[in-house]
Amino acid sequence: MALFIGLMSGTSLDGVDGILASFPDHYEGGRVEILSAASVPFDLSFRKQLMELQAPGENEIEREALAANRLAVLYAENVKELTRKSGISHSEIQAIGVHGQTIRHRPDLGFTRQTNNPALLAELTGIDVIADFRSRDIAAGGQGAPLVPAFHLAVFGDKNVPRAVINIGGIANISLLKPDGSVSGFDTGPGNMLLDAWIQSRRNQPYDTDGAWGKSGRYSDKLLKIMLAEPFFGKLPPKSTGRDLFNLEWLREKLFQTFMSELPDPADVQATLTMLTATSIVNAIRDHAPGIKQAYVCGGGAKNGFLMALLKQMLENGDIHAELSTSHALGIDPMHVESLAFAWLAYRFVANEPGNLPAVTGAQGFRILGARYPA
Image 1 (cartoon, rainbow, N blue to C red):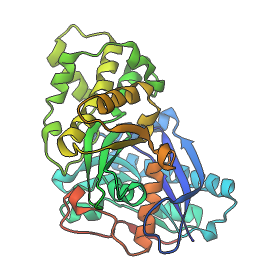
Image 2: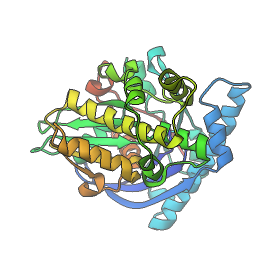
Image 3: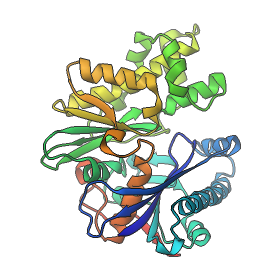
């Protein structure tokens, strides 16, 4: 038995999610046991601090370093809570896999940037830390993202039925798992990112609880078509994206193109953004995996009832005919999947096994991902 912690703070900027997982010796796939889970929220000032780092600004090198230190402290708090809940001591844990907070993702320019201080985290916890998972894939000519399809294949793959795993965080990505063990995957576009940004700007709320605000509006077909005309949606995989493209400025530009100075009701915009997330996901499945029979949602988007209803309608009653559920049906809480993925990536690093899929990222070959910071 090998014990690993996975920590994730995603593009939704809501906080740190962590899990402590047990991997069987010589693990070759299948379900992994989660021993404990914990969340540590970001306060509004820290969310603002991280958001401001998404774009160039004054003294940003120092500001990023200070944010990385603060993030490491929050990561350490999460680790402390995980060990408290499980009753397992730090000395029994082989490593922490931690992604860091993405502030820039530009594989087209050959770099990605995840704010993090893994050396400080190793000092604070007394546990080895594995971090910086994307850089090696990008160095090998890949996108560095999405990283989760290899993990999805290991824990969710089925030898009889083709499946799609839909991860809806700030950005949405899909993993297309075939019975023969082959897998493809890519970012489909915005997940919760624009939904959260819009409700924050209009109602000062961090997210649309259960999609209630979006459900109260009426989506604009004209605005949806203009947003779907964004070249990213028509680009062939491998592809990845982030806040560098899909942000409030992008949305405001599309609103101006559609309505000029007469903006629609804000709830109608939220409804249209929800439809954008659902439509871009379904279009990606239709274009690249029309034979999918089952689809499972994980990530924060699984909590948006309006979004889930749209996806269910489109996937089950449209031309795809794929049953929709969440990863709960496969034995893993939707909110634990991404954190578990980084525990798995840390496990792969320690096992000296590759963590990427060249067919997904476009890298020149399989690579061992991450860098180790010993305790």
